[in-house]
Image (cartoon, one colour):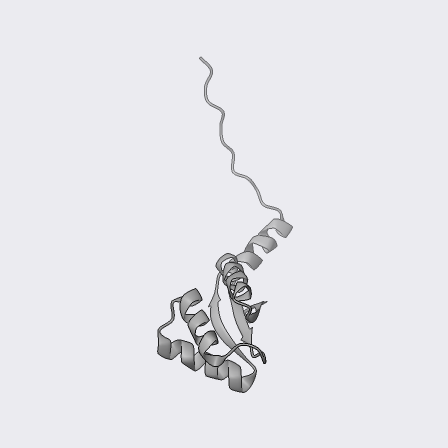
Length: 101
């Protein structure tokens, strides 16, 4: 019987460490105003995608409408990318940006 192989810790390169830190940092989702979607529709989408209460979704929608855009969510990159894809599937204009430190 042979002894099990020893598992050694993997050393990350500086590049891999920076890439991991970049993914782990906070990301913002911005939604932009557009001439197509009705305000009520934008409110409903925000409620559906983020499970926001109606009042919070309406406040964000009004910011989008009056300011031209609104920060609707901040968090880890992977779920942020999923949220942006969901917003796009509802025909909303949304983008992802790294949150400032």
